[in-house]
Image 1: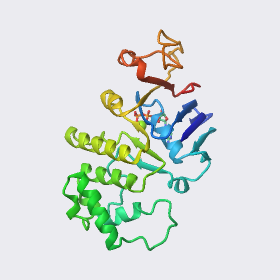
Image 2: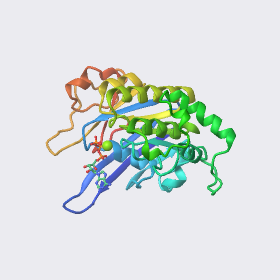
Image 3: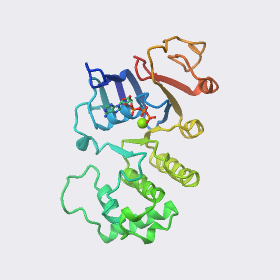
Image 4: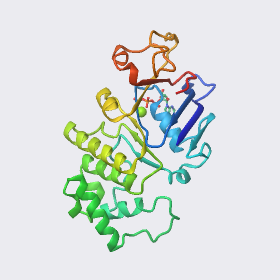
Amino acid sequence: MLKITHLHKTFFPNTPNEKKALRGVSLTLEEGDFVTVIGSNGSGKSTLMNCIAGVFYPDKGHILIDGVDVTRMPEHVRAKYIGRVFQDPMKGTAGDMQVAENLAMASRRGKPLSLKWSSKSSQLTEFKEALKELDLGLENRLETRIGTLSGGQRQSITLLMATLVPPKLLLLDEHTAALDPKTAEKVLNLTQKRVSEGNLTTLMITHNMRDALRFGNRQIVAFRVTRGNAVRPQRLHGRRGIKHCIALPRVCQKICNRVRIIRAASAVSL
Ligand SMILES: Nc1ncnc2c1ncn2[C@@H]1O[C@H](COP(=O)(O)OP(=O)(O)OP(=O)(O)O)[C@@H](O)[C@H]1O
Ligand SMILES: [Mg+2]
């Protein structure tokens, strides 16, 4: 479904601020995979996701979605394949537009753009049903301006919008990080529901190891490689299911059988 090969991305190349965010990362997701990505700050997780979504292009490497090479496809064109929820609840929805208008826009994924996107009454019933699932009372607030909703309500709607027309690939970048624990749990459960109902291929970044294990059928650990961080295959190398291993923090060793490793700054295949 998603095939990434030898992806490289360097910010500010050949300057004192040069930052090698990705160096030769390869990754394959099969259809229906729910892969969770954990790893330290600055290890390249969001960069990987931004390259997949087309926010910027990689320097080298290829990204294929369902066999289509999207490596150099503009972000707005490949958006028809991708549903995305960001860490910031303010992103992903248009704050000045109503709930119904936002959902109507999302329902046009993959269709030609026109100014005739406003919602029809048949759609409003569909939106109401979908909003009822959220259990936040939003089904009666279709005409409410999104900007007046709480972060949790807004994030739940963004998730709904990202999955209203099932995308080929769902990208979640710490999408519950800004929410209180109770709302985060609600949004995560909703995520799982939408993913399993639509059999969506999903890549989810999280800093929560428990969530990474609970929701992912496969986990990836991204490392920020510093000069002193030597690349050493460790005792896990060769264990069942582990193709590549490098120095692991203790917490990862405990779950080694379920973890694959990427190192942002090194060529590793998954
Ligand atoms: N648009 C950008 N311009 C310049 N540098 C960038 C850009 N995006 C990311 N970087 C740099 O690339 C490196 C990887 O950043 P990235 O945001 O991918 O990390 P991350 O793993 O998502 O971290 P976090 O867990 O904090 O979100 C960092 O050093 C960051 O400063
Ligand atoms: Mg990030």
